[in-house]
Amino acid sequence: MKVDTLLGLQWGDEGKGKVVDVLTPSYDIVARFQGGPNAGHTLEFGGQKYVLRSIPSGIFQGGKINIIGNGVVLDPALFKEEVEALEASGHPLTDRLYLSRKAHLILPTHRLLDQAYEGKKGDGKIGTTGKGIGPAYTDKISRNGLRIGDLEHNFEVKYKKAIANHEELLQQMNFKYDLAPLEKAWWDGIAKIKQFKRIDSEHFINKSLKDGKNILAEGAQGTMLDIDFGSYPFVTSSNTVCAGACTGLGVAPSAIGEAYGIFKAYCTRVGSGPFPTELADEIGQEMRDRGSEYGSVTGRPRRCGWIDLVALRYAIMLDGVTQLIMMKSDVLDTFDTIRAAVAYEIDGQETADFPFEIGDTVRPVYVELPGWKTDMTKMQSEDEFPEEFNAYLSFLEENLGVNIKIVSVGPDREQTIVRYTE
Ligand code: GDP
Ligand code: IMO
Ligand code: MG
Image 1 (cartoon, rainbow, N blue to C red):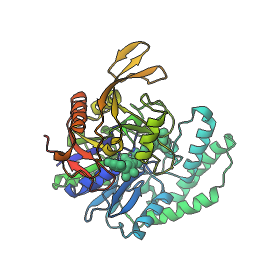
Image 2: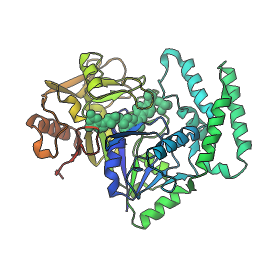
Image 3: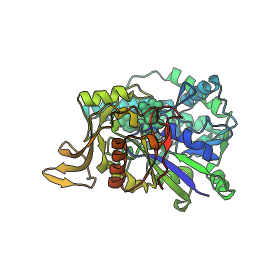
Image 4: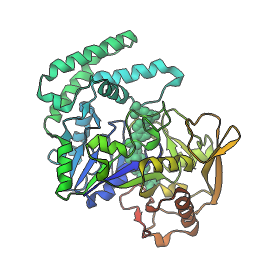
């Protein structure tokens, strides 16, 4: 068997949580492989809305194993909050969620360091989610990190050493903080983690594959936020691309099956950094209002703009996308015309390839298509799609070179249409 991957192709918030939940019935195991509580994956069904940060979005479909893989950074305090909120809503998960012993822990001081570094950057700040992601991955790479498996041996000594190092850095930056309440919540979180099965997930996953189990790897963030290929330095600190599923779960490249690439019918970004197709006008505001484009973790308004096919083709190339999933089609229902950037003009030169950097001199070259002016939210099958909507799908498929297999027409689990096209 293979590990299928579901990857955000834009700057995050494409709707990964919703689609993982929809696809989960076809899988035995759902695993997160990178990122941490910077993610906010929203699911809606039965009139209820749920936001997941570190816990995989397969948790709501009964009888499935969910795994937090080695590539994830886990904040015990936020993990405890998330588990308790799920329990309170009638979704106990202690026996269905396994944690990799090799996953790194976000310490309370990582969150403080995140804030301190952002403060130092001033106008050049990244606009992080403030969850300590960068500092936790920095410690992992510089070989100073603490892992879930470390809980089993001499943990307090290792913890104190790490905290002392961080406090030295915070003091050098003259950053004022109160660690005590953060530490209390963090240790309560550690007690919660100890109630879960902590496994060598690379062994578990590879054995499950041998035993014929289907596995879905759930990406967080999006390809344009990848540490290597995103709009550096305005990126997150992990590999969000398909290859990240190999290192973040311990599976060989040959074990990867489908790469589902998910994108919105338009584009959003939250935080700082370049965004060539951004609309700082009433059209962008209409997208924000109609799409409820406000961060599910931070509540920040998301920047909105037209779909960027230059960036999408780049993401599809990097991820080896085999099937596309288009989200939030209904958000464009009211527009007379819809634009799509097919190339960039940089210093008078047109390019269809994603450049080294997308600076201020990048101008999108647009193609304009007629809007469908139809309420898509009630659609049940592709037979009901208006002609202009089908034309938009065909245009995208031709430009991107991959079939759009699933179309989402609303936030609810039920508002999802699987197309017949092969
Ligand atoms: P993720 O981080 O990729 O899981 O995406 P988020 O959950 O942060 O953001 C996607 C938002 O769009 C959520 O609030 C979803 O409930 C919502 N959503 C998902 N699909 C659709 C859709 O097809 N139409 C509309 N209107 N909303 C959607
Ligand atoms: P999901 O999984 C959208 C952005 C932040 C910031 C940059 C770095 O819900 O799609 P970080 O806290 O990771 O150091 O912030 O990355 N970012 C996201 N944007 N969706 C996300 O996750 C994001 N996770 C991080 O806004 O620009
Ligand atoms: Mg999100």
